[in-house]
Length: 259
Image 1 (spheres, rainbow, N blue to C red):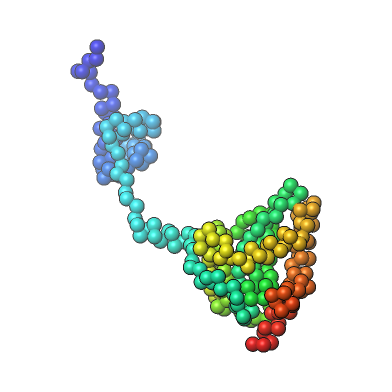
Image 2 (image 1 turned 60 degrees about the horizontal axis):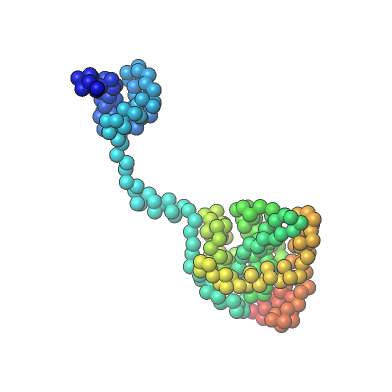
């Protein structure tokens, strides 16, 4: 039978903890209580005991509501999408004004690689590419770096050139957004889940996978050579009916002379 006259064994410890808790304006968790017991009272108390007593006597810390402005500020530093400024205007008459970009995967010899490409929509020229065994941010950032350092492009800057992509993780990343902004390019994105909005890139990847026996490659190094050779061929030797039977580079130069 329970003896109701028997004092609670936790009373003294509770009073000590409550005093520290109240002194801390009811904002102290068990860790803060334990540290103050040690430093201010020279008392060592097991953390499990502190937690048990605080639960038993309902010494709960009030959880602050999250600051909505802080959340907004945080989101501005996270992944962002932008509007579809290209809006399927694939019929471009001036080269080196509108680019599109995307990544595709390539299976070969029980391995997987990724190919990132930037294409001029008007001429169809591949202005930059980068392959990698890994699909990380370096893949797209280095592709932009290749574009920036492409000495074969007859332009002095990338000011106001549009670069269109889907809403993939890499293109909404703050690092990519900053790189594009630093080049003073105009960023555009497809609507979510609408691959037709980036049809020129899908078209190139389709040609690549039809024309190249990349699945026969035994090593990543072989694959990279195959990609390099094909893009060189595609830009400079592959005549296209829709480009007035010219290659992409020939068509680009033809249009630049006209303009």
